[in-house]
Image 1 (cartoon, rainbow, N blue to C red):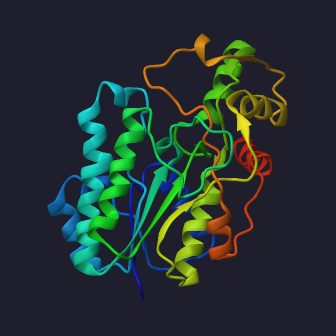
Image 2: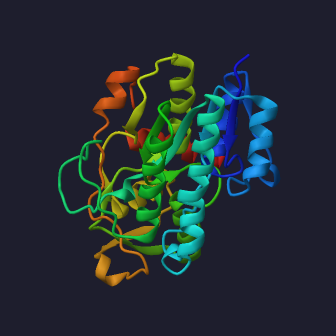
Length: 285
C-alpha cells in the first residue's frame, strides 16, 4: 500500500485532511505527532521517511501569523523556506511526490482580474515573501511536486476568520470589517478533499496550481455572510484598510484563477457561500 505522510497534522488543514480520510475510509495516510514531525528537525523527519517510504508527502506545516512575521522574520523563513527545503530534499531522496500548500499572499495584489499561475509574484509582507521563497526551493530540488496556492482558509478547526467573527459578534453585537481587500474565502475541508482527490486520481501533471472556492468577496462581505447565515443579528459595518492598520500589508486583490486545476483534475469547485453554510452548520452542531 502506498503511504502518504502528512506534516502539520495538528493544524487547520491537517485536521481537515484527517476528517476527509476518516469519512471516506482512505488508506495509507499517516499523521505523525508534531514532536516527531518538526520539519526543521531533519533527523526526525528522515526517520519518518525511512520508516514509511512514502509515495506522497503533504506539507500543511507553515508559519501563518501574518502580522507577527514582520517582527519574527527568522522563524517565518525557517518554517516557510528552510523546512520546505528539508522536505523537498527528502522527497528527492525517496522518490516521493511532494504536495505543498502555499498562499495568495505571494502576489502584490494591485491588479483587478483573477490571478493565474503565470502572473508575476510580488509579496508585500514577510509572510508572503517567506512563502514565495519556500515555493522556489521545490523545483530546484525536485521534479515530482504539486504546489497548491490557496487563501482565506477557514474551517471548524483551529483559529480562523469565521470563528473570530462569531466570537467578536457574541461579545459586541456590532463590528467593523475591512471592505477594500478582495479575495476568496476558502473552506479548508474543500481543499482537503481536493488534495486527497489529486492523490487518488493518479494524474501526474506536476507543477503549480491555484485552488480556492468560487466567487469573490471582501472581508466585509465575508463577515456579513457569516452573521447572516448564522442568524446572529450582529450588525457589520464596512471600513477602509486605513481605519484598521496592521503590522503587515495585505494584497488589495488576490482572487485566483482556478482554470488550470479544474481542467487538469476535472474539479467542480463549490461557491464560497455554499461552503460557508456547510461549515457554519457543523460549528452549530
